[in-house]
Length: 422
Image (cartoon, rainbow, N blue to C red; front, side):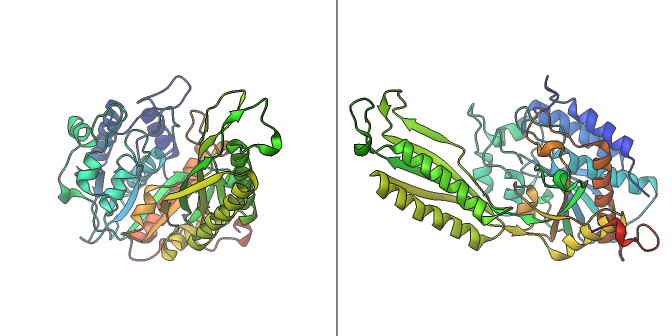
């Protein structure tokens, strides 16, 4: 028993026509007309597969296949919304891959003890309504309902109003509360699997992330008559701080990273010494303690830079998302499925956020990554091969069967050679 790869790729291709861009990508922003069309299509496919579809007060869609017992379901989730000019696989692979698992079970008339539910989370990307992960965050208690419904896009349109407009505002009682486990299939959005020459990866968790606003105040002055030794150049100070962030992250080692992605210089005039700079710092690590230590090293560096250049540097660590290690039994179930398929058991951490981050607050959670060509995502050229997609979805199928049946599902019959996996 394997998934029908042709059927899955046809479904992915059909869904990618909704919001298709001229560059080969997709724009399907949360709660837009395109999102509604994608939801409607997904709903039709689920009902054709015999699933019962419902949606909750945040627009999260659930499609249920009953088990032989009325017990907590195994949840398979991701998202159908995209960024502006995004890719064809980010998020949607997890939703339609889960649907293909159900279709395969139907094809082979396989029953499971646990029910299985597919979840299409609302506004995972956060491109239209901020912050990201609104649907999963609201269900898992991170955000208050009224606050979520009052989120506005750049045009001032409210989340709650758009949810009602597209006819996906459901009752609170439809939320996905009970769950035996949560699994998410997703493209990697990074280069590690491609560098290792592997199709799939076992995700051990989602690394922590902290965001810092930095304000550097120096003295603006005329570029000509102001001697170098007497300057209080905010931009030179910022440059040293940027290089320091890069150095600290490199010294931490993979998968820790440090990024300065936003920079504003004032007065931003060619013949004036910059008087002030505001900038961002994004630090990430799989260890909460190491994340804090990285921030403390940046603070020390900022003090040294301020003293050297005669500027003041203020730092506001305004948001932190702690690392989320996944449940060991779910991680092992994914690893077992990889071994049973003859795939390498390659473990890695996710550098990007996913709905699985918040799902892990309620249910034992795990993720499966599929190789991204060039490590590229959030781009119209984002691509994963049909072969890699099939491999990842077969891992999802076997993992789901392990978790949803009374005993682990043996695939393939007989032992797997050690030469087939690491």
